Image (tube, rainbow, N blue to C red):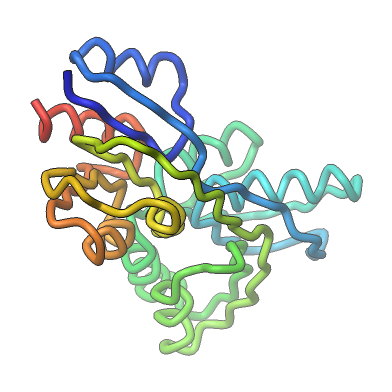
Length: 222
């Protein structure tokens, strides 16, 4: 039986997808998310969220401070981020697959507007750089930080599921890739770029969802 390690705790139905395909599965959280303290205006015209962690930290901060922030237009990355925003009553104007995609859309359609960018402390440069290069005003609000949670494993894996560059870094911090046939199945390009520094076999999911990563793992390893 082939073995898979997930660097993110999976839901029961997600685990069942792998177990049903005949794999053994071990899952853990390779990173922890800590909400930072930050302030926002009570009314924001345009806001950008690049992850579910950013959204969750935003609402947690508002709850702690007993404050409501009204946002007219929200731009985000990923369908799961979009869904979380909509569940909380926000109007999602545009969803992109990657930061570069969203940045291009904003430049082409909202070049004379300003934006609040809610992001992690270790955020990627692509999106803010695109906006700044075109003179679009962007106010960065760091809402959370990523903390590595390394864990050592005493076995080899046929496949490892990675959901962020930080997840790759956390795994590598305590483990050496001995089994050369181990495949790194990654949620997106930036995660794959980090994985390629350590793994010979790197594949990318068709879209940025946990289910897509699982589907790619099944297809790759069967």
